[in-house]
Length: 155
Image (cartoon, rainbow, N blue to C red; front, side, top):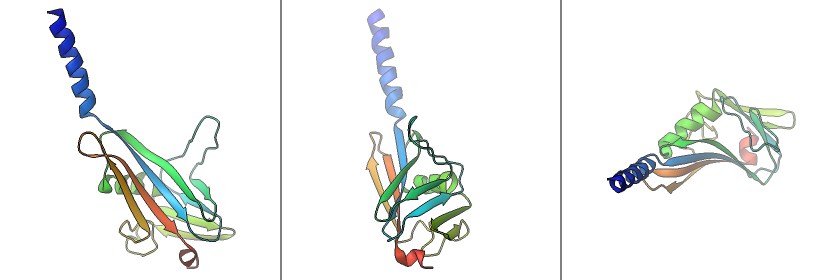
């Protein structure tokens, strides 16, 4: 009888763990321009990389020719193309996003969902979407990469 209870408890624990897979989401700025820039977001998400690292409260520097990846969402469940777009829009981007280069600022607003250069146009060719499948059939990891170049910054 004790063995049956032990086996049932172990099976229940495995079943519960299998039903609640975890997921992670990342947002990357790929700065292909010849300028260092600062990516500024207005969403509620804040970046705290580690106890000893710098915290970025709504802005992040991205050097010319480099990528900056912000792990901004995660939890129990799964992700996918629609989920990461939702997370990016409401958790990270917020009402406006700016790219600051020296004393110049290029700002985009959430209402601009059709502009070719707008970070709010998730169907723009500036975006790349990547994902990794999870154990329960959904995606356990998803990433949106937004490409910035000199042509965009010259607006």
